[in-house]
Amino acid sequence: NAGVTQTPKFRVLKTGQSMTLLCAQDMNHEYMYWYRQDPGMGLRLIHYSVGEGTTAKGEVPDGYNVSRLKKQNFLLGLESAAPSQTSVYFCASTFSQAGGLYEQYFGPGTRLTVT
Amino acid sequence: DAKTTQPPSMDCAEGRAANLPCNHSTISGNEYVYWYRQIHSQGPQYIIHGLKNNETNEMASLIITEDRKSSTLILPHATLRDTAVYYCIVRVVEYGNKLVFGAGTILRVKS
Image (cartoon, rainbow over all chains, first blue to last red; front, side, top):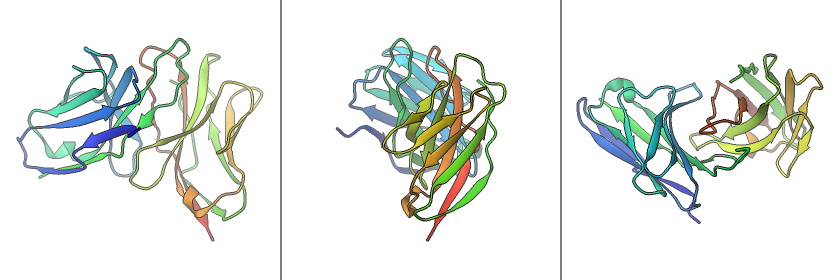
């Protein structure tokens, strides 16, 4: 099992450019998440999905869009990148079950710089 | 989710037990205590969780006070590879099973 993988690992964008970050998991997890982490801070939830075709907003959703067309993939889009979106982006996934006590598995991160 | 308070940093000698405290004085009866850690530049890694009983696994022990207002994560024999940021999170099991991360505690294990 590869676990949770993220593509790309690094990216530099100019202000106003767009890009899509891909998260893939091979553990048959229902729930998937996108977080961002700024220097010296904890992770903040951007968007999440509880199943194929469903998405929901997290703590800091502005400037981002997401899609979950396939159960194993969760895409994060930046339509018009801004310097404030310079951050490390982490994807995570987990099982859903009544009780919901399963741990979240995290990917290795994507380091995005917007100039 | 209940707010947690952790010391910003701690040092520990290699081979000794590392005891990381977390205060969650406003925790509700249905909220769990979770611990994750983040080794430099990597994605967070789950360590352990509990509701009211003490828990132990191959990585660590979790001690929760009887009133549940605080907890301690114990790494019994810290190694240099345990140097990381440790996050204490309390959350209710709900739609989406979301986690809310604070700033955590930077644990430095020194030889």
